[in-house]
Length: 149
Image (cartoon, rainbow, N blue to C red):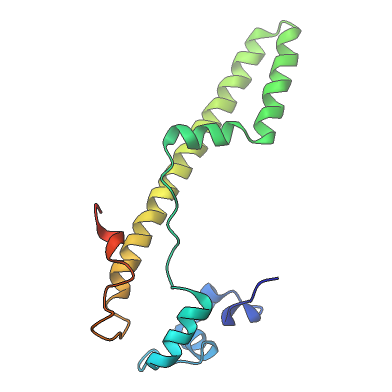
């Protein structure tokens, strides 16, 4: 069991909390922020407050991953069995529905992956305006995130 964050120790999920309650649980103030020493300690203990970067995945890779899921494989096996009985029209109809569903889910997943990446980039940009860091350290953590964006 890993360490739990301060917000995970309550029954209410962190994203459902008001800003004031989240700040109270984090033992900080939105107006004042954390002292530099406390911010450094939390950074070392919990890591940066950032959406982790994932490797780029092509649409083809997302599609292959979706097609390799057990439920889809079971449907294809069932389609093969039905085809053995010669019910080609039924097989064609069911295969069309399954492939359309896979295509829609893959497109939706690709959109979500792109959206998360955009949020990660925007978050890295927005954080610079809210964290008080010494001038020597400013921008050090995420300058590479913006190249090619």
